[in-house]
Amino acid sequence: MSEPRSGFRFEGRFVHTEVIGEGPPLVAIHGTPFSSQVWRRVVPHFRRQRRIHLFDLLGYGRSEKAPGQDVSLGVQNRLLAALFEHWQLQAPDVLAHDFGGATALRGHLLNGLEYRSLTLVDPVALSPWGSPFVQHVRQHEAAFRGLPPYIHEALLRAYLQGAAWRELPEDALRIHADPWQGEEGQAGFYQQIAQMNQCYTDEIEPLLDRIRCPVHILWGEQDTWIPIAKGRELQARIPGASFTPIAEAGHLVQEDAPEAIVAALARLLN
Image (tube, rainbow, N blue to C red; front, side, top):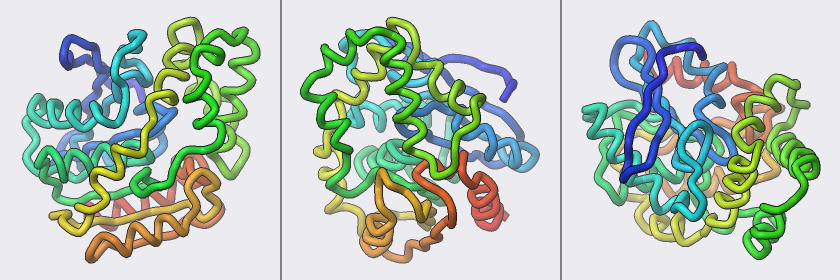
């Protein structure tokens, strides 16, 4: 996406934002360890019908990665609420993936943000979540932060590939890996993993039956990060939610089957 880029200051920290297109608002929220670039094969299809609001979560992508800053799920919904105010959004359609799903749910249930609709793509929403790798990094963050760069890059690429069902092409790997390269990027990658905590989804689990907008759930059938059974469980917890399994797609549906997201969103928005 080569659209105009800008930034937003949240509690003194820089947040990368983009607004493209014209029409009713659509907010797209990425997950971990990705950035707003994860939507590059999805949102351009709607730029003639929608004003699309994109941003990188704190500590991700082109947003600030200061050592020791809070980049947990506990701060991202407050950032979302601040951006809604900044963008003067009332009730946009929201598209959210992975941690973006948790952020959208927390913003709605804890911060009172209103949505016209909420489309969740393989969201982090129900415990337990977090791979053995995540648990290991949480216990040894300093050791991982100090890995030689070539070992970090190999580990990072393997981790990113694990999110997809199909082999990621080199350009996609580079797009998703670049923000985590260099001294700041490497430290930021392990910092965001170390701050992962199920308490932030546990906090909203009892509130899922109070969601005030239509919810549409899309889930990659081959998701090894969060199995599809967890998606069906989430659907059962949200009254009236629809559920669409995506064939031959893993957790990273945006790379494995972007056309499935485009088709589902087109039906909803039209």
